[in-house]
Image 1 (spheres, rainbow, N blue to C red):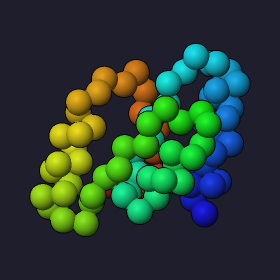
Image 2: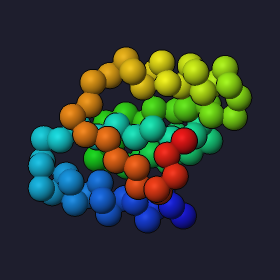
Image 3: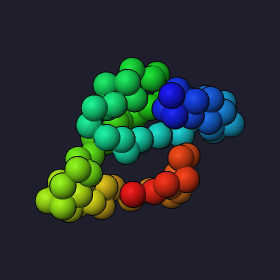
Length: 77
C-alpha cells in the first residue's frame, strides 16, 4: 500500500519537472512494481534482510550521484 500511495508524488514531480530522472530504492520483492511505473527510470532492488545484503545495497546506492533523496515512508532504513 505504501508504494501505491507514493505514486502521486512521482507523478507530481514529473509534471513539475518533465525531464526529471527518478530512481526508487526498494526491497527486492517490490522492484517489479516500481519498474512498472512509466515515470520511474530505475528500480534499485535492495536486500536489507542481512548485514551483508545491507552493505551491498549501500554500495549499490553510492554508485550514483543524486541531487535529492526522499524518504516517503518516514522510516529510512
